[in-house]
Amino acid sequence: MGSILEMIHPCKVSAVPRVGREMAGTRRNPCQSARRSLFIGFVLFAAAQLALAVVLEHHFPELRDPEFGYKLKYLRQKIEAEPGRPLLLAVGSSLVFQGLGPACMPASNPEQADAPLFFNFGLPGGGPLLELLCLRRLLAAGVRPRWLILEVMPPLLAHAGFWPAEESHHLTRLTWNDLRFLEGYGSPSWNFYGTWLHSRLVPCHEQRLLILNAISPHWLPDGSYLRNLLRGLQPCGWLPFGIVTVDAETRRRALAAARAEYPPPLFADFKITCEADRALREILTICRREQICLLLLVMPESQVFQSWYGPCAQRCLGDYLSTLQRDFRTPVVDARNWVAEEGFVDGHHLAYGGAVIFSERLGREVLRPLLEERAQVPLASCPP
Image (cartoon, rainbow, N blue to C red; front, side):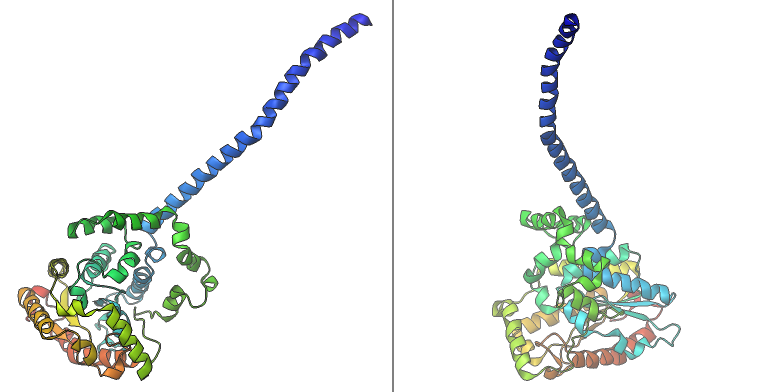
């Protein structure tokens, strides 16, 4: 019996430290497992953000740039629904976005087999640089218009690059290829790249409303810009102002806000910047190369808004438009005096009633004769 206990006892004594070591090792494992889990979670989250950034860069532009993306989506649907109809595209700023209604134009009668397919591709803040980027994107997406209405907005000709109020708005919507292209128009600052990179670090947060809209649109907050945009955006790309006519007090406040946006020095020292001129001329050159018939359009402005220019600015603008018309043999339509004061919201954005008046006149007096005479004529042969 004693020998048996002696045989067992050493085993018990020797087993104690080994069990202790195993228990100590077990006590350390939860910390290591937590660190490992956190690391794996971080890697998976970073990979998911990278994958989402790639998707935003190359697919589903509506998750990155809602105005451009949803318009491109609607345009493709119209082209697929009515194949063979020639495309007449309007590109410009918010003045075109809200003021040019293709559905109001008499020339857009769908009963005519060869009637042009009108689409409004105006974008907020769309100066010459954004118009150029828009046209490049559309051509890269396989959209080939036969005719192009290109807005020339005078205040945006006097500023290099993006309009200041729209710069941060546009930068987050650009692709990497857009950024590289913009280097040719002056090296972007580090802040320029920083703003863009910041929007790509955690895209699930930056683009949360756009992603939420793609998953469940009715979850969007009431009154949000995106919800109002998608509710008001027409299949033809037009976003009409919700009020037919504007009362005097609303117009007065809106005019005061517009005056603050376009301060007197802009018009007092009005001159065409090299960057704006270069971007416009590149658009005209692309249209000539692609055989797209082009029409330059100056949108309506109220008499109050026009009075801010001054004689020097008026002469500078007139001389510049004449130069473009002569150099590229393209027609220019100056529609600044086409709509009365009560047709505007703030002196340059058209209310619904003003947009209808302007669109019908443009279709009747300009587009219908233009399309009938130049249906098969490339830009290089178009007379001024």
